[in-house]
View (cartoon, rainbow, N blue to C red):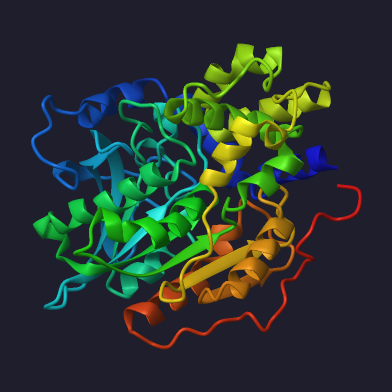
Length: 415
């Protein structure tokens, strides 16, 4: 059932996933070689995290995507961020600047954090022909409101790596330093107030930003965080997906990233021989292709993980450490979740809603019936933008804790 559901996800709205995979294959040689000089970091780096290194117009070459962004201009940038230990590193990003004049206090900034895309250079959104597909439901709305939108690739994705996938401090550094880089760019006229919106992996980034962003730059004001289908309660998600096709698609990236922060994390007793033989290659594939291979391997009875990582103490510790705790009441949070999601299942985020409401978080939830993982950010985007606009306008936050989640906050019978 999970196999068929994931296949349906990949085939749903074929122009979004299948066309993206096909265009990546065709594009990943000549186009990526031509882009390499832009993403090569200078040595030494000329400034601290938040330094803008270079910019250029962003071209859209995917026939399924618009040739321009209505109401604004699109750019790619390279900027300095930092590894969790403070070591400077570089990331690419996309920046969208409204055509309308900036207010005297500067434009509000919306920092977008994308979902899982794969670790290869061609997978980085600012290097991908279809890098704005998950932004298509709300980007022009944000520009019409006069906001600068900056969308980090994350350090190591399209730049010297590896990408620290689902590592909280790395993700938050990349998001906050992208805002700093935009503020350093006179063309953007960006102010010091910002919000973070993310999908899937990016939802993990957004929720963690609510905890860590102030430590990265206390001079900026984070008004709220929004997450669509966030990969939040990692132990619960992993426990139901470790032996499915999702394990093949996401496990290799987690393995590389988490062993980067903990080299002692065991492999041989946790990952199957087939997983060990293929994880480096699969992590470098863009997500649609990795997921298709994962479906095929699962259909042949192969699993990436040999055991549930939650049952291995060292892996369980990493999973728990990278799971965001409830946000404090003074950090507003918006969460959207589809009930048809077979990647980030609905019930763990129902549990998140229950736990965070119980902890006093100022949480607003949007439950979307029959919405799958691929469409979560696109469909929830307009509601998220409206919610963020209320945060920029300093309107009161409405908690929805009196409305129960659309699904039970526990695994369905038989899972």
